Amino acid sequence: MSKREQLRRGWLPDMERRCFYRGEIVYRNGIISTIRVLSDECVPFPSGERDWPVILPGLVDAHVHIESSMVIPSRFSSWVVRFGTVATVSDPHEIANVIGVEGVRFMVQDARNGRARIFFTAPSCVPATRFETAGAVLDADALEPLMADGSVIALGEMMNYPGVIFHDPNVMSKLEMAKKYGLPIDGHAPGVSGEDLIQYVSAGITTEHECTTLVEAEEKIAAGMKILIRECSVAPNFDALAPLIERYPDRVMLCSDDCHPDDLIHRHIDDLIRRGMQKQINIFNLIRAASHNPVEHYKLPIGLLRIGDSADFIVVSDLPNFRVAETVIAGETVYSTAMPEAQLKPVTPINQFHADKIEPEDLRIDGPGGKFRVIQAIDGELKTESIIMEIADREGEIRQDPTRDLLKIAVVNRYHPAKPSVGLIQGFKLKTGAIASSIAHDSHQIIVIGANDKDMCLAVNILIENMGGISVAYGDQKHVMPLPFAGLMSGDQVELVAHQYVSLNHLAAELGSTLRAPFMTLSFMALLVIPSLKISDRGLFDSTGFQFTPLRVKEHGNTL
Image (cartoon, rainbow, N blue to C red):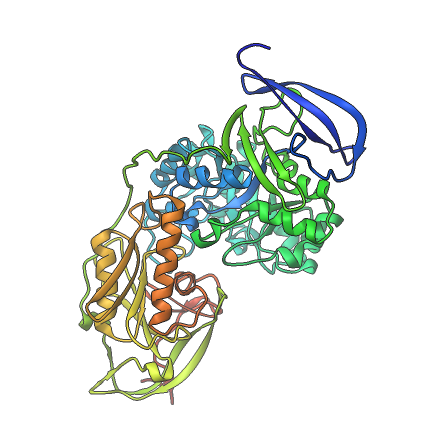
């Protein structure tokens, strides 16, 4: 064999016969040149032996927002290879809302310094709505250079489904631009059905990752879409949708969507393979969903264990428990149980942060008392309820009342100095202190809740000092995890970020919060496209009627 020729032996999958055979692959200069069959024996599920591990195509996360991991792409990709992930299809929607095309190009460039292959889509909905201040506006003209130079491999999830159905010119121009460059178009249309769904799909949209029920998923498959089964920190849908893998093996993929660091530290797409096998789903259907289908749909230059393919594969030492022993990309081992951790290269932060610090007076809600609209947060949900509460004023102002779980919530514009938008919220159950974050979907202003105005200001101002992050403040104590990359991501290792994130969640619990993930829930209180009552930097927002609504409830024809 030549110096650059390598050979691997193990149980190889025969996707047509749906069995495993003893074989060897030979690859030179990162390309598979030969695949040899070493035995006529072909078994449906090899038991696994030390000298005969199972060799499989690498796993692909078909839809992920890397920003949700709170680490930059190079750190993310160098971590997930330990779980057998060789590639992701990533929508840089979050950083695009903050910094625009420059943010997308940063993600593309930084990803090249990682170990996995990170492919990006062009963010299709920046800003998400016209009812909030975003850091950028990306129309079709702004997106075209990304498509023309190959920086992106698809148009990212089209969340503006009314714009598709009613042929909004701005929306349609983006769809036509993607078609011009032969790029697939990702969807985002939760609950869209019937004739509206037909119109949405007819516009050229090919995928959906928002399904939560089999009924919805099967209607969308019948309409021509492919379903990305999502399992993530925010919306775990795998258990509900797993039967699709057996029923429609060529029409499904697997994705994480939003994976927070405390989850990413333990698992990625590999966990869905394990859980699928526990559900008695055929391993070959799982391989197809996790590898073949996303590679073929997005036309990714990722190998699938065929002659002439890139030598991209994983070595699994324990198939029933899906333990990845080694990950190989382009013939190079990027992870093995014996390899040292990746060395971090310093990366210069990219950001947009121009907020002024706030004072307690900025958060004042003047009296008199009366009936007020209050956001009701729901543990583990993106949606909220809108409730009406009778609240008495104290010394001429409306204040927090932790005994009633009544807190203030505020959004501070991070892009230019402006007076905060202030509302009222229940559900977080803080008894004292405040928590704040510069992760606030989708425009990523600073969002804060608290049991008193002083602590709210402390939590916000430490984020402004650090140009982003998440924080906890109480009395004279303040704790912060800086996120200097767009106020969304850290340049630290996943393990450190996960530890800091968990510690801040624990601090929030010590202040009284009973939510499983208080910072995650907080980050969605400004997501205006999901009902019922939310808040933006411009005011309280009725997400059902899609309009601003006053904090005070009108009585007898007047606003109190």
